[in-house]
Image (cartoon, rainbow, N blue to C red):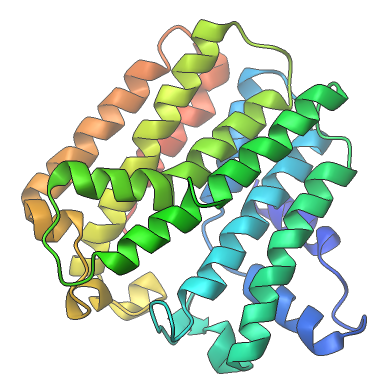
Length: 286
């Protein structure tokens, strides 16, 4: 499935030689050839639960991943997290320059919405409009961008667990939740109770993803992670490890995994891939 996502992203991005060539080359550098593609995989897994057409899911999966890639490019900038390594290679502002990195993020964000709004991705126009709104909310001040703002404002502070969860419900969880919602919307209508189960699952795996990221940042090497290890602690950022300690953080990840599985009960075999992704998110080592 990762190969399918990679091929779809390759098609969705402008060719490197198209003017302005340097910008398009940098966009492709930021997106292609790396990453776990968790968010696109969640789109496809949720789409299985609603019998969605694979071509529609390609569109939704690419749109989510383009937003995610833009956020990484901007997060790595010196004015944000100031990192030099991402997915095992130099960050975009290091490989190119800061101005190009800023434009790459801007262009990837607009490309995501161009793709999602301009290509059939749902059974009707009203549903497709809801998909565009879902992605916009997840990316904006009430989602990912808002979470990053809270994160920057929290450096050097000790957050309570509810405060930390609020930050990551926005910063990490919102886009993961949107990925599941987009996959579901691309298919046949779901009964409200079943849709609520998918949303509950998404909330759990969104938080679990960040908990595990924080544990890995404290335990894994830079070579394993493909990004600078231990940077959160060095910058004084509050994390699940700094708030709970490693063992309690690991226990929380396990609890969230169980809650995610419980949310899928009653959805049948169509939810099998979602269950497997919850396991991968919590049990991954890199």
